Image (cartoon, rainbow, N blue to C red; front, side, top):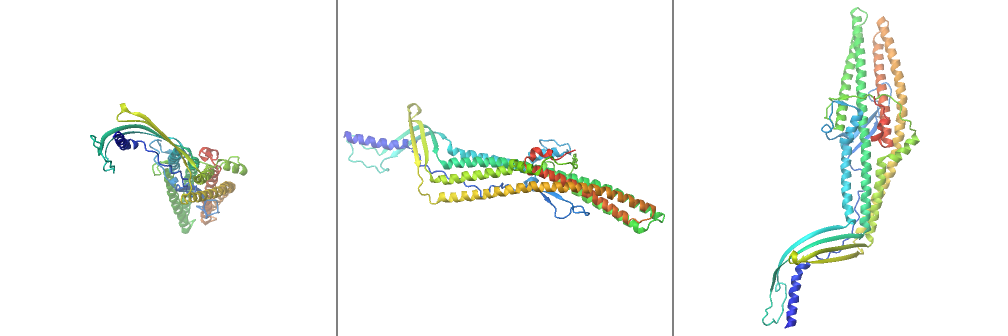
Length: 513
């Protein structure tokens, strides 16, 4: 009888204890880490680019084929968030102010900054896999168990002590802290190292976006200045055309000029008026584009305060510029970091074949109430030995090696592109500098020619055909000079971007007045 009673008590306690065993169940076996897949390309997927291009045909000039550059801005770099809410605007915009506003509000660097925040967040998530994970729980429970429903049958019963079929109700409370620690997991470690390199790459990409913003905004500002200079030249030509028209009209009145000469002079006036309207329209569009890039209201109701003339570039030879570019270009550093991230990712994939070691522990107090609780703990160490995972590891390795090969190819291509950028900028510098010199002499010669032909017209020994032709030649010479100065300044700004650090050093390349 005593034996049966003891057996009954053991059964009841075992059933009741099942409730308490649910408080701290043994941890499930660890599944092991996987290599985090990387995109195939390491290049910035953000949509946007800024490039200095050469027009394949002459721009506004018709006299000679001058270098006619243009700043092509695409995607996010053409837009911005509002800057006037935090940076008051008085209606006057200098080039330095335009660049500073764009660096803070243009969507190019703004978007890259948010991408960097996202990468840093992902880095923290990846790091959590190699750091201790601690959680606390408080569990309050009540339970009643039907032993007969659980399938327990005991016979014969004990005289005077009927066998219960219902146990409980009883209650319990548990206070517990749980620790999970990855001791050795090379896959998780390499995933973390890969995410660190991605953060570095995004930091460099943000720097490169700032340099591109300088090229976009600075180039657009230069285009607007050139457009304003063309307007001034067109106004001067219009005044000259009006003076010639007045002169021929007076000569017609005294019988010294034919009506065809008057008509020809009037056509020249109308042509210059059309040219002026077209150039004013172009300037307004350039100013609207500039406003969009710098966070200003999208209109042309503001004044450009700077004038940028022809000036010699900084004393920087080609070899030195190439050396600086390979040392300073942020996009090159970003590509190198992307290669390192891909190498760590491949190491993470390969490490999926290696053993890993995990520790799970918990400590807490369990009882029917806090006053009657007692400390309990458990410590479980697990060594995981991967044997066969259905080809998952091999697939991850293939993906990682493909990404690594692609990023190495992109790095090699970028090195060639950087050298091309520097050499192209130097070629444009040399050609545009020579072009400015020739254009200036051409202005002087055509101006002298116009003066002489007008004197002949006044003396009545020539008609106004030669004068109109001289006017056109002078107008084209002025436009050639403006385009040449613009091309030279764009080449200097492009060189600043090509060698890297344009966001900080652009003023060393451009002389602003």
